[in-house]
Image 1 (cartoon, helix red, strand yellow):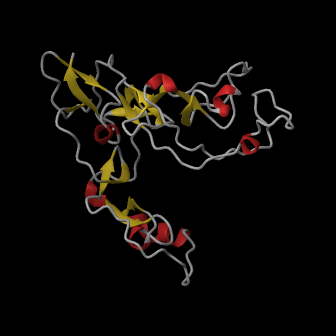
Image 2 (cartoon, one colour; image 1 turned 120 degrees about the vertical axis):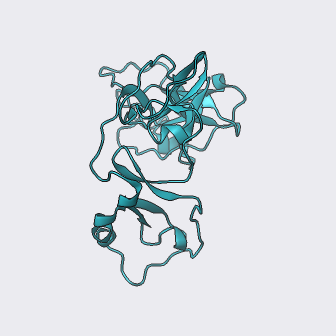
Length: 246
C-alpha cells in the first residue's frame, strides 16, 4: 500500500507500564485506566501484515503502530468498545526502514480541486474536502523563522515559523530565562524556509513536487493520470496531491 508515513515517537514501555500485568484490573477498553502508556519501541517487520495500529487504550483512535504480536495489540484483540470514535483513515504498514509505522491511507478517488487545496484531518491526513484557510498570513513574506523552544535549532532544540507580527509575543510566551541549559548542537535544517501554507506559517524544507495537484491555481493532471492524496509528504504538508498514472 502506498502511504504517507507519519512520525512515530520512540520509547519502550514494559508490560506493567502498559497495564497488561496479571495484577492490574483492566478497564472496559482493555487497559488499566490509571496507566499512561508511553509510545512503544518501533517494532521490526518484513511486510505490512506484521504490523497493527495502536493507541494508549484499545478504544482510542490509533496514534502509532506496533507488531501484531506486541502485548499492546494482543490485549485489544477481544475488546469490544461501546463508543467507537470516528478516526482518521490510517493503517499500519511496514515502512522502508523495516519498522512498523502508522500511515495515512492513499485517496485516489477524489476528482476535485479547491482554491487552497485539500483539508487536513486530526491525524494530518488529507481528505477530499476544501481546506479551511487560516488568517495568519497571505504570503511567505508574512512569516518568520523563530525558536520553538528555549534553545531553538541553533542550540540543539527546535525552530518553527510564526507570523512576523507575532514573533515577539511568541518568544515571550516561551518564558525562557537567561540561564537556559542547551545541548549547543546545531540541529537546524539549512533548507527550511518560513512558508505561508493555507494561511498558516510553516517551516518547510521540501519544495512542492512536480505534478502537484488539487489547488485551483495548478494545472489539472494530464490525460491518463489522476490526483492522488497522501502519497508524497512534500505535497501533503501543503494540502496537495500528486498526479500519478491511473
